[in-house]
Length: 178
Image (cartoon, rainbow, N blue to C red; front, top):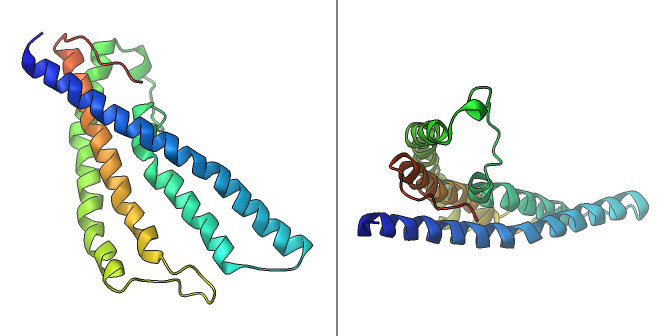
């Protein structure tokens, strides 16, 4: 195998490993989300106590899970797709569809999201934006930063998927999803 392909294998493996570790870390926030929502419900309906901060905490966990784990979801091919024709295609046909979709849809959308949200997020950081609700969390700027996290993690895993598809199309031994 040529050294260029070996390097691509390493890049794909590195991105996959980063995505996998990130997804595993973020998966623990599901437990924290469930616990925080249960606590909100118990406090509100059984003790008649409300907590804006606790409700916002659940919202932050929810956003972290969905925006932070988007690359992990892509890596494991769990995003919604309409595969009426795709599932009947050969592996090379699927690789062609994946590479074209990544190149002409996924990457441009990630770049668009990143570009369009940059100023929005930076403005929030510049004022260290806090919740507008009394008793809310003082870290809205962190919540908004998850938009950039989505764009970055999805873009990065999209690059890995594109390279994986190109290697398959070039008859280079495929790097397996791990």
